[in-house]
Amino acid sequence: MWPTIHRCTYAVRVVDVSRSARIAVPDLLRLAAAILVIAVGSRNVQAIPPIESWQTSAGAQVLFVENHDLPMLDVSVEFPAGSGFDSARKSGLAALTQHMRELGAGGLREDEISQRIADVGARLRGRFDTDRAGSHLRTLVSMRERDQALDVLARVLQRPEFPQPAFEREKARIVANLKEADTKPDILANREFNRLVYRGHPYGLRSSGEVDTVAGLTRADLIEFFATHYVAEQAVVAIMGDVTRAEAQQIAERLTQFLPRARGPAPSLPLVTELERANSVVVAHPSSQVHILIGTPGIRRDDPDYFNLLVGNYVLGGGGFASRLIKEVRQKRGLAYSAYSYFAPLMRTGLFQIGLQTRGDQAQTALKVVMDTVKNFLDHGPSEQELEEARSNLAGGFPLRIDSNRKIHGYLALIGFYRLPLTYLDDFVKNVEKVNVADVRAAFSRHVRIERLVTVMVGGGLEATAQR
Image (tube, rainbow, N blue to C red; front, side):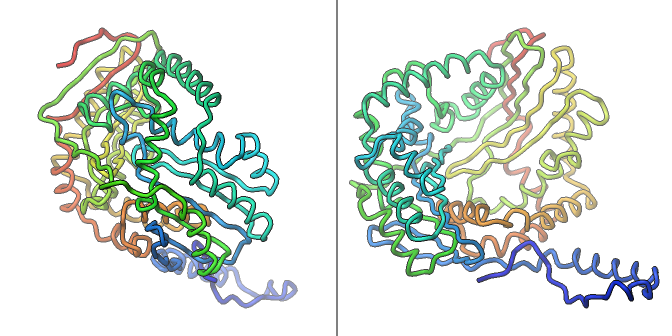
């Protein structure tokens, strides 16, 4: 058992209420101040659970944290099977394959899968993004509940059936949703932005696919995608909760022993090439707000500049009301309710994106303010005070990122999938605190060039322009 992560424990003597009046007010103030100093100074003193790792007999990687504080178990199995593994001709295939795995598996219909999970108070949900696809189960650890929930998960993972009636129904539903989505300005902006940033790379495809690509998918396509991408050798199992190491080993074997085996080298993603010049598109749309997106390819998940960019971006646009973009765009000029920036590191180069919404008659002014703010940041970097506040907030807020089994389990899956060091959680705060102004300036100069940014504007009050 390991201690609660986000709490500090102090040895405090219990004072009888009848005698408490004898303590002078200045003494109480000094005591409160002393406790505050201890709490603030202890932001680096955290009990990080030890992470154990091994491989199953089928070749799957396992990460495990044992915690007996709650009678709960979180377990996930993920694969490199996200939308980045789609092709332009069959975009939407990865997402539909992931979704269909829970609509009939191992002799169970979709309603039976839902009922068996509900009967034991468990929760089964899918995970899907650009790089990853998989399933996450949360269940009680009492034998009946755990065994039934794991049985359902094992069937979904290893024996999906992709029933034809459900397949046709889901295809029709997705096509209808895509047609509706294509009328919304935020969807149009993101779609155009990804296309311009990635220029033919699979990361630029819409994860849900397009109307014509989804309509053309067949059940055989799903079966082939599953056999190629949901293989044991590429699986990452994350287990967190009230089980022993021996029990965790049995669970991991149960969930991976009948997965497909790799038929050759693991599918890989092409490299993302840098932009050669700036590019911009304006799309007229009958909406009251203009959606503005600005950005470029950013970094991979294993980039050594990750922490320099994380801390620096907190100052630029990731720190909410403390960030420069909010101060310049909202607080000083009232041009938008919100403005943000972020890096989304992936297996290959993920996005760096800036975003905001404003009125059509203010769009060009807001865009200029954003670009001027970014240029100033790239030229001069954050001030020492801004950087210290960013480090303090990121380091001080880190315990809240790992204050529950669910959150720690999420990090286990992340660490396993991206092959990050097992000490990632232990090292997080010190990696944040060692970032300096020179580090931030150098990192941004390597990854964000203002003369190569993509800009997309979609909304009312705009005159459509062609790509340049």
